[in-house]
Length: 250
Image (cartoon, rainbow, N blue to C red; front, side, top):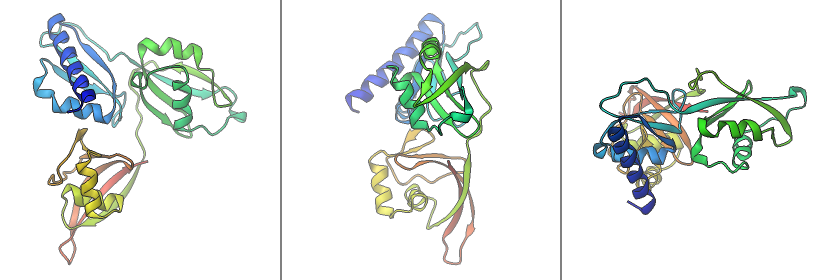
């Protein structure tokens, strides 16, 4: 474990201890997929239970709540959803995820204070720790050359469904390296190399071994490629190869 991972794991343990010692729910910042993997690797060392949320189902960046054994109050994640709309839609540019993130980072905000950013044709929104929301609302008036208006959603969760593209592939087995090779259209040796380099995550945990057999519903995050959800096996071909389905997040 490198120094950064060691620091992150110690932070998780400290938040867990604080939760039990003070009898309150403690919270992390928004975690990247790599940080979520470190959390899973250390879950047996924690002194409290924990839950995670990114504000909607399948959120990539998630906040952790460390929950003490004896808890006598209701709690909410300290995050808020901010919706962005162009003030003058007729003159608005076509903004991208990078544009929105760049505008936020230009305000001097740490990436860990911001959750997922969703940019589609209908609207744009992002999640942020509530402590920095007033600052964002005051300072963020434009993205690129587009004047925008921001408003806070009344809920800290939203009913947003990511878009999927349904696909199928054929492999010799549903072992992880074979599945990754088929999805990414690369050789099996290249797939194995990606796994060994820690670039493949299964359900939020880094997978360094190719011997894992994929199961229906598994979320596979592949660094440099994207995220897919393994579907199900659809049968065997005449050459004894396995056909499977998956959903590519787009």
